[in-house]
Image 1 (spheres, rainbow, N blue to C red):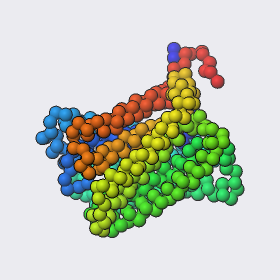
Image 2: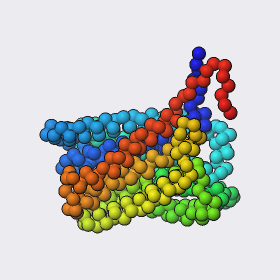
Image 3: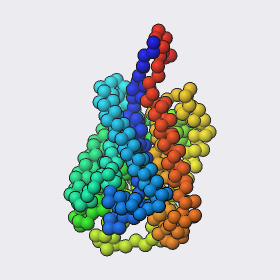
Image 4: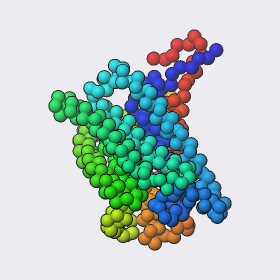
Length: 406
């Protein structure tokens, strides 16, 4: 007779498991990219239910398949995202009552708590995507939804600043920050969380036709963008000093690529702001300027991807943390975000850069050649997410009478 024991995630819960929900939410965005750039949506900056339905009535078989895959992907990973959000909220409520939580608050790892507002900000974005693609006539009331979305993101931002105030207040008043143990980019998590709030706050700027909503969106998102950029610069400088002295901490090695999703989120936020400035304030940006900007951001991402992959390979990270016989680290979920973010960035670079400037023709051979890396990365991250889910959430069966290993 067999009995089920706790999964690794349940037995050794960490706030970093919010990154599992974040990864699922990011995959929702990758499938939305199909609809964003392949389905015509004249009259609004994003495709809605009516656009998608009209396209399926006239599209060829490949177009219909692409839409079907996109809708299926959005639905499945949205469900997974919200399931993991609810699971994390329940687990974190118990975790905050434990001695492990008190220990966390007395270490550098306290910033791991910022994974919660990061994932919650993604939840609002995922909810909006689900509404756009599955709810008929949503666009007719969207102007009423923007103020609600702004309030939601401001509330999440306030929560994030509360967590940061507790951490920085303790460090800057009492000290105790362990610089030697700061040999990773783990301290970029707060900046990443604030940038996710920023990109959400920038959405009304790109989509609203109401001037005061665009203005409020521009102001609030700018505050969070500036704050996240400053925090990123400080965190990287501090981390690099420790890394070159002590080497990268093996368990936190995936954080070396956190810059990649940060750049994608920041880029989308700035693109949204530019669109709002164009529609509401007559500020115009040329296709060439956008192409140059996207190329610069993508170049930064490729650089950090190469650096991160180099370190992961040298440390044998795959065998150490991603194999069935290896250790378990909640931080492994940080590997999903860079792949997802790079996939999304490539879609923007190809469509808002290469196509918009006339360098390549849309849906031509070159178009699919440049888009292929985005699709490959998306598939790889889906496989990785389910692999991690199997390693961390599967409940192993232990034979009756057998003693579990310490």
